[in-house]
Image 1 (cartoon, rainbow, N blue to C red):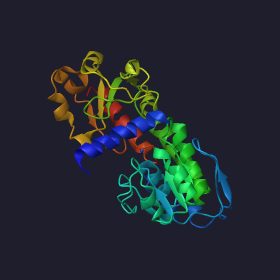
Image 2 (tube, rainbow, N blue to C red):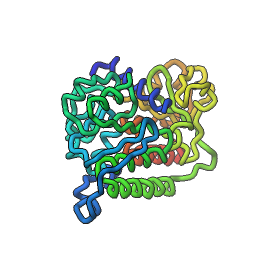
Image 3 (tube, rainbow, N blue to C red):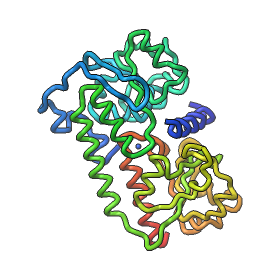
Length: 320
């Protein structure tokens, strides 16, 4: 994908989040490695009726065996709960896990005929672009909309919904429980600064950011960090565009870059921006280069994002 298109995809992903992250030893764990997912439990009964956060209730008469996922976060979740073998196609952004059947399907500009060509018995969307759900339903391809998470609890809810939809309800519940436990441990083990640290989370090089209203901001909030983007959120739904002047005046203790892969940003490029070398985060070596995907997806790798934040807090607490 070209750089402009990738940047556009990331921007639209942020906007989608406003409108509506592998766990070590957990998220990457395949269902067959999970004792409760290895056949030691009774098969989930179908039919099952699902009530998503958005869209109409969906009834599936049988366990879906041909799933198409048009959301990278939902693709990660499908594989993490053990439904990977049922997935026949995923969109172009779904690059994790590596064995996901990636295609040129798009979740941003979905093509009904192309999706229907895979003869899916379940299509998973995060956003109903151009009423694609109704069009696919008319063709007898059931659609489940699992929207972008607004909160950490939404991450768990979406995971459990996908588990029920695919016949892996117990595996999904187990995964959500392990995530909660691991996240609690990461937070409990993290150092507690004597004074709250401030931070700036950068989505792209035009200074879009994520506030405490978002699930991303909630992860930072677990560590008591204060978000410099919060005062700038004027009806932006949690994803405002900041001005350079605002960032420089706020002088954040930490800068987290979620635009490393997409936009070539690094601690060095940040330091080279006019005026930025004087920022506390830059002077103290507290510019954190995140994995772009971990910093934007609301799937089972949220705990890995939390670990990155915990490491940054520990480093900053030691004086940079």
